[in-house]
Length: 249
Image 1 (cartoon, rainbow, N blue to C red):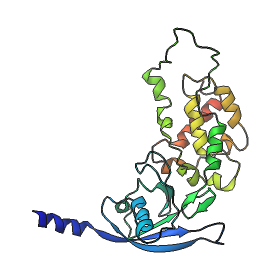
Image 2 (cartoon, rainbow, N blue to C red):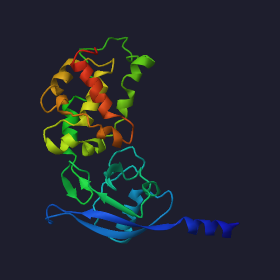
Image 3 (tube, one colour):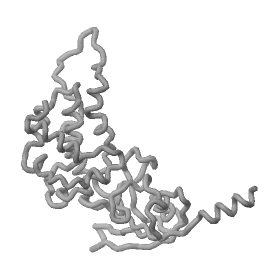
Image 4 (cartoon, rainbow, N blue to C red):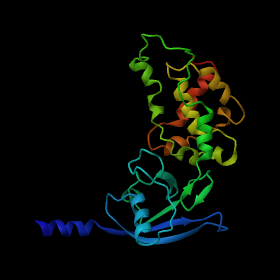
């Protein structure tokens, strides 16, 4: 039985070509690709192939990662032309003998596959991503703010955002407007506006009601297509517009 298992394991193992974009803005004038042969199994993720290269072939490859389970959002990159999480994307799912990895679009490059997140964090912070209440003090019998299942349903989908940046990377408006707040921040603005516990709706709507805010979105929908958590930023932006136009309260 052990011999049969060994044969099956050998048959499942393959070799793929991993093309990694290499670029250091402090040293290079343009991006170049380096190719590596990497072993893969049916369960091997793109991140695992990159780490295999770092361990065995080229220690200098620059890549950001952390949890390896699609929770932290650190390993976002362009994989075969589409923004994806490297730890969540299996090589076998790509159906290609060549896997090309590049840094996310619309983000300044630190080195190779690692990009700067300052713009994303700044815009996220701009929309006040926290429950905003006008309570001045807590009564002695204070308790948690209870919500009905219907109230929770209004925003819970949008609370799944892990700030990976894939939606901003896919957004065509982000590529042409360096001041656009972006789909990630707009979706999170809706998340808090729709929360029955929050009292900061008016101030939040004022923040995004400007030329580089919600009205700059052209509703391409590409942000929702790449979200690994099913947040659907495009829908959040449309629902948020409902508040802006007075269709929702």
